[in-house]
Every structure is written in C-alpha cells, then in structure tokens.
Image (cartoon, rainbow, N blue to C red; front, side, top):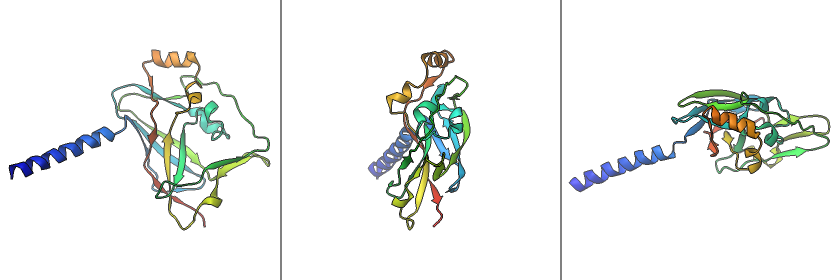
Length: 199
C-alpha cells in the first residue's frame, strides 16, 4: 500500500515538473475566440522570466504592405499560421508583377522589449489575400484547402534564419544590450483558434 502511495506522489511530482519544463520563457496567446478574414489577431505576449528580453520584431512592420515577403527587412517575425487538426495548411504565395520593397531603418524604440513578468498586447491584421497593385498580390493558397475541414490560426515567432539576426545594426544591438536587454531567439508558438471561412 505504501509503495502505491509513493508511486502516486512520484507521478504527480513528475507531471508538475514536466508542466514547468514546457512553459516557455516567453509565451504568446491569441485572445480571439475565432478568426475571420480581414480581422485582427489579438495577441498577448508575456515574459515569464526575471530577465529583460527583446524580440526581433519591429512595430513599424505593421505598416509594411509587403511584410510577409519583406519580413527580413521589416522584422515582421510574428505572423499567422493556418493549419488543420494535423497541422497541415496552405502556404502563402506571391504573384509578383512589380512589387515594391521598402528598406527599413530600425531603432531601439521600434523593437519589442519585455521587462520581467511584463505583458504586451499587439493587434496584427490578418488577411487571406493582400492586393498590392494590379500586378502584385499575395495570399494563402485557398485552392489547396478542403472547406469541409476545420482550420485553425496560430501566431508564431521565429528567427531561425541568420538573415533576421543580422537585420539590426550593431549600434542598435549594442544599445539594447546596454539597456539590459537580451535577444530572445527561440521559437514561440501560440494557442490555436478556429478560422471561420466563407464557403
């Protein structure tokens, strides 16, 4: 009997330990109950640590109409991902006639900074298709989607490409370091919310 009780407490302790292990240092939560085309992703980003972190994300990126494909320059590193129950979903494709590409200059003011235990709320536009001009547009490949399936939207932060890590000037990086902030380079994946599609 004592052995059974010991095993139960051991398993409960392991479960608690595992839950604490998988909690991200920084978390992203979608607060929408569902997402429709041409609405906003309501995002809460939380620093769960006692460190000062900055994300390689610029507040200016929202105003870049080509942010999905100019994300290395605009530092648009928190984007929407669509997937079904098996995490299969459409890619974003660019139909390029003559698309404008802007060159951005970032400052420490533009970069998303998080103090210990701080929460920051963002509102990011979500569109299935974005028209730039008559010759240029991009969007999700809806032809590849099964409209009898339920799809979901999540918000992901990812800077695995070295190009992103070199997007900030050394001056800005040094300034952020002097301010006490450290780059958060791990991937962050939010919860999923249902995508409401027009059939």
